[in-house]
Length: 271
Ligand SMILES: [Mn+2]
Image (cartoon, rainbow, N blue to C red; front, top):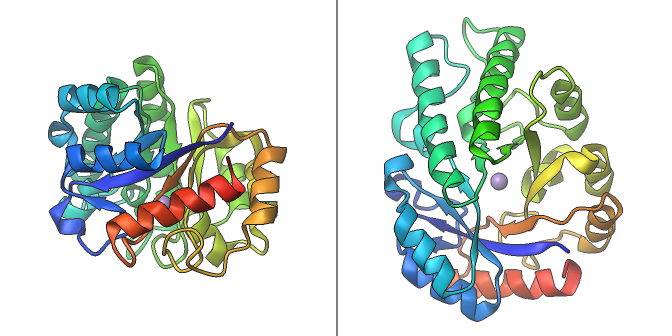
């Protein structure tokens, strides 16, 4: 059975971004539980800002899980990523992600590498960037495995990264990794831009899908754009997907309405 989750961002610098609830874990957990969500996905500025004990207490009180933790604060706040030309920035990016993997693992939550993958530009060739990404995912994937969690890699659309935009390319890249602990995040907003057919893209990811960002074509909450969810739901069932569909969407028209719209769409299509 697919499980529902909703995002809570604690990152001031990310305001305006596609997260449903903002700045208040306790309030977000109350609302998530009231609407019947199974879990929350937490985006924090860094590992130390993930209040592990508080989150354990809140999720226990409200019968929620932590679906995943984001790592994009390293990019949003520090402009670090895994493919920067200087080794020190790449190392900062890896250390930043490693610490979030460890914090998430204490909550049973895998970390997501999205914007921290970076891009190739200037003096860095695509092959060089992919080599650095491969090395980082092998290292961080094994680190996550030792901590008892998977590591989630999120292919992004062309306006956010020029590394691996499509399912076919991402799966081919996965086959070159040494670690077996990387799973894909199928973000329906990114896939709507890049895939010829979203359902086919989900079948290409197949059993490697470890997380879904459940969102509409315009990054508004599911049901507020022109996404056709019936074939998407059929493809997810076909590949046996049974993890989280998480609302990573703009808080449109506001946080509460976005959370309600998403859980309604989840119950209609994925439950
Ligand atoms: Mn996403």
